[in-house]
Image 1: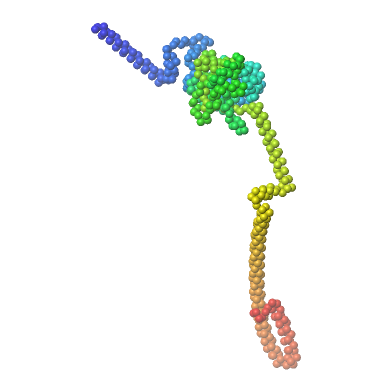
Image 2 (image 1 turned 90 degrees about the horizontal axis):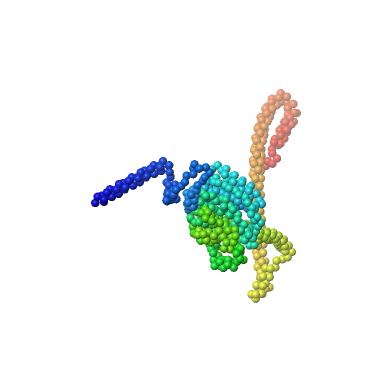
Length: 548
């Protein structure tokens, strides 16, 4: 009984101690968080990554020693929020013309640029790939917005003796596929071995000659949380080739036909897709695309293409690589997919999530384009000749095809062709006569209008002339009246003067009777004659007393 009481007392004491410790820890934690001495995400990450609170040595006081716990770099599906660093591995060969577009894509990426490290391998180049690369890097790393600058940048240069050309036909020719793939695998392995650092969580292999890609491609691929994942790759085409076309046929699922073909080949053979020499009948990721499909849909793959590969860094740390030899009758990226599957990693493709490769004309395309140019030139010349001959034909010959067609129809319909022709001519003549008659009517109407206008003009001129004559007549009558009045006044004056003279003469005659008898008649006659003549001159020439 005492023992039970003692045990219960001990248990209760321990319980109180535990509760007190927890409360104290919560208070301290709240204080640290509130004073920004520690963040909640970092605390949760610490608890998640260190569930057993494993021992972490402290080398801060030891020079030239760096410690990395690789469990912290396993690659998270929300790596852009957990500060997961990613290394871009970019092999370059004669890539000067593509680098400006590549850096434009990099600049537009939404993944934090400070978490992106760049690693380039320049090999077997005959153009100014290195110079253009340095120029674009200087531009990218000198931006005023420091958030646009990238993390660590490394450039390596090594030639591998690649003698196959960089044209579309050279790179995709069937004869050179095996050797070319093996050399490319060596280059990728060299680059991957020096580029991957212990603090990298993801590795992104990217071809430099991509035309367009989503700016969120890192987040879009990463959030699937797969060991290896690739998008679908298509390319645009000219209209005469069909506008678009699947490009990367190296992403596929294995098939029975592929396995049977592999068993029939020698151990160094390399199967390549898209060639009639190797009919594998495999389902290709490229042909699974639906333009309206869900971009989140996943498809398990065995082989993958190398245009755009996102892989967790642990895949390479554990030993997977790009076989530079025939691995299960494949090499490079396709063999990388099969090897990683063999090692237990998942390999996934997104059939409805597409990036677009640039269009590179093949030798056949170039020949076809040359033929199209020649055909266009020939067509233009032929059109000119046709126009010339048509003019000559129209000038030198009558076109009787319509008549022949008419006669043919008449014969087939058992119609008297002559009568039909006569009817046709009669109709044409009637139409011509009607047209001519209408034309004559129009001409007569125009002439009638012209005559009416002339008559109207003549009437107006006559009226104006009559008006002018009337005004002149009125002015003449006025002048005549004025002249008559003036004549009457002068006559009256003369008669008065004459009477006065007569009176004077009578008085003189009384004194000299002889002088009166001799001189008086002659003087009166001579005085009146000039006055009568002057009065006649004052009368207008056109004066008519009857009208007045």
